[in-house]
Structures are given as structure tokens and as C-alpha cells.
Image 1 (cartoon, rainbow, N blue to C red):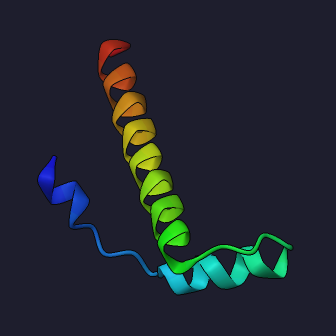
Image 2: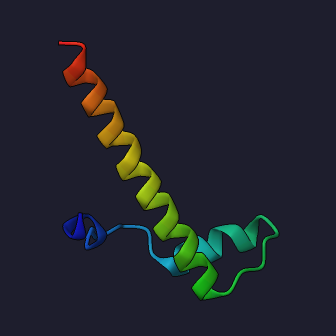
Image 3: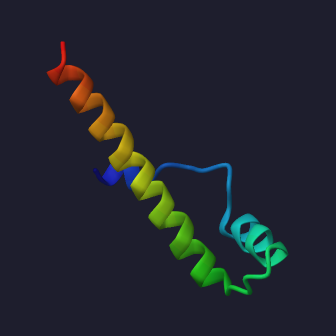
Length: 58
């Protein structure tokens, strides 16, 4: 799972901060990085769950 943490995203914490600031959410860069990390983890869990369910239904 450590390799998943090293996943390089095209979306940077700076971009997350910019997008959310435009929507009226004033975040620090650290908060934006935490949000990005959380969303990446959720995406990995979702894909892993989908693939494991697909294997069960074969």
C-alpha cells in the first residue's frame, strides 16, 4: 500500500487550494494537501473495492 501513497497526481495541493478558494473556501496549503490526500485514498479504496467485487461475481 506504500506504493499507492507515492502516487503522483496531476492535481497539486496548490491547485486544490486555488479551486476551493474560488468557491469561497479559504484553506491553507496544508489543509488543501490533507484534502487531496484524503480524496486520493478514497479513490484507491473505491477502485480496490470495485475490482474485488468484480472478481467475486465472475
